[in-house]
Image (cartoon, rainbow, N blue to C red; front, side):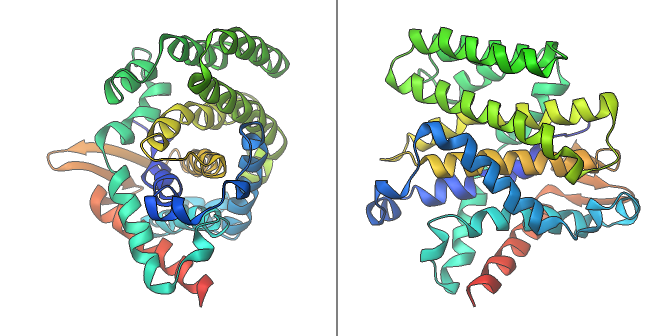
Length: 313
């Protein structure tokens, strides 16, 4: 089964979990963060960083895309993630010696079967329920209001072909469930809505910069897919962030952008890449090449470390 979304999931919590450690929370001032209403705007800025970083990748060229290697694929993913990480507030506090653990520790947290499969299943398996999955992962933390809100948002994007209708109806869904929510749930609803609106706007205006060959239904599928990948990750990220003393919305926005950039990259190579579950876990299959999931994630990690280390020197 094709994975349209989850490669960059390996990397998403680098930003969130690393930046929310107790030591860094104590070091940071909340005035450096953004408000929940600015999450979407910062998310789009982070996507610009990623696009600039991978612009020269052979994966971005439709003429060379079919001849690249699994190594090129890993490097492109790492370049996009590294570009977002470089603009994280926490990154600028790191020394060269801290970079490997900064990346490695966060990647270790994200490599779970649930995280790997959730977004892929969301848009490939009609029977899959993201909210039911979240309720199992975070018992007693996903309220009935958040569940209903997310289900209605996902259904909207899956069933409508009209961007204007989607944009207008998002506001109605937001207002409907925001009124019913407590303060914690309002943070999830507002941040998710903000990212959904900003993401849809970004991809409608910039999808051609990522892949100029997309037209018609293929273009719409690309735009809807990466937008859903964006906003559907927010609840999980916020729930992870609540394990720490403070939630930082810049990191929430950047993590959503990482989702979006990664799903966009997978969209570019969708006919070439596949993820299969074997006897010893997942493998990435890229063209005629095959690599164990662990080896592939290690390769992406090493490219990230190299990129970030070079930017400090």
